[in-house]
Length: 406
Image (cartoon, rainbow, N blue to C red; front, side, top):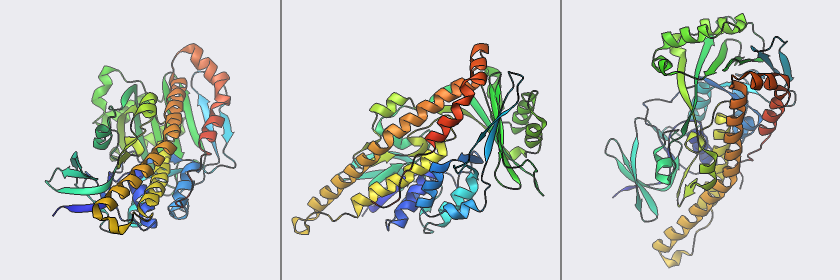
């Protein structure tokens, strides 16, 4: 007899574990398949805006993470194109912190029952099986599930099953790193960002000792060999920092080789999100499997947290609602439950579709403006657009995904 699960989540990243924890808080067990042999700590850290902290509070881990991360009071934006003082934009009234990805994933995982996450478990194919989905894993395991959620990143097997194309390369790449200063870094609390000459870079303290940094650029063909060589990556970044203050150089210089990573920047075309199947029957996607976006808004991880809360709420409403009349038999019960699940996932898709389109489109536009190397665009950005972009970013961060209550 095949094993039947209520909810299977593919991917133990931010969206997957947030969804699982949300369901756990509501009394619903889920099983999370992770293809790696441990939690995936790629990216090192990310900016968490007010909307992310609302989601973290909704699943009950916001306070513990606040104690380990600074509140960021403002951002200093400097141009390497124009000779003018850096502009400072206050974050007063907003909650922005640089959150270490490892601490977030570990905190989420610790709140789950010990048998929730199965590592080294890669889903290779999905089949229809009546009102269930049958999953085949790379180790030969076969099981069925009432609900299938794809949180398996930009190369999502579940997104492919739903009909989505692979995310598109933007023509830009990013190098990210994390530096540890034992005894304290002394940089204060502000976010520093540098724009111009086709580059976007910056750094942001997470706490007393850890500083996250990034560099995005438009790679040439010869830059492709950098991706898997941390020594060359570090040398490349240092070569691009000639016009950048020494603080940024010291952060990169302090970074260990195992704390540097490079990746091409990809995104989902907005019209795919408009017309595509975010959900289909009892299957849906969340996180980067749904809305891969460029990092220019700092909203990729935040949106994944929102997804998790909304999805857990919609699934709970479907699974915990009383079923059909028992005396009509098991087949009727399964069909009615399937219909409730289908409607719950449709509600989730409806709630997340326009939010995802908005974030993906805006991030792409902001990235184009910030990283354009043309003289006219550089002048317009530094003289005029720089006054409006921070306000727009804060407006995107004012979103409230709600609580787990349905």
